[in-house]
Length: 119
View 1 (cartoon, rainbow, N blue to C red):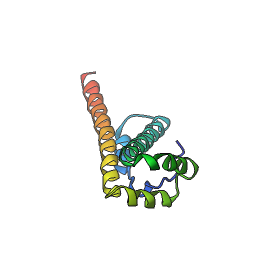
View 2 (cartoon, rainbow, N blue to C red):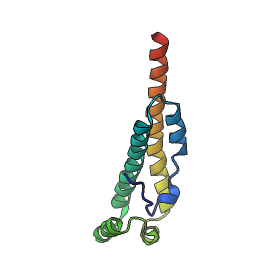
View 3 (tube, rainbow, N blue to C red):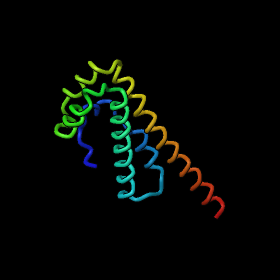
């Protein structure tokens, strides 16, 4: 994923995920692929949440604007008028995705330690 800025970009900080990945014994290509997966998953979950909250009459317009100009802050302005407390709700969605990845990485790190200790 090209990690282009989306209208919700200001809510995304994955530095904690990156720090955990730095502890893993993986090469840079794998690291970048995992970070791309984190960004893609966040994007999917954010859009899924918005589509669940957005009235039907606005869904096609939203998806069209998102496809044409994903970085347009006007999308965020429109959504904030339509979905109450949007930033906090999206922050919760993003945090949940990050936590899932952090849990998986921590499980991997723990399993690796146990495996190496048993070698």
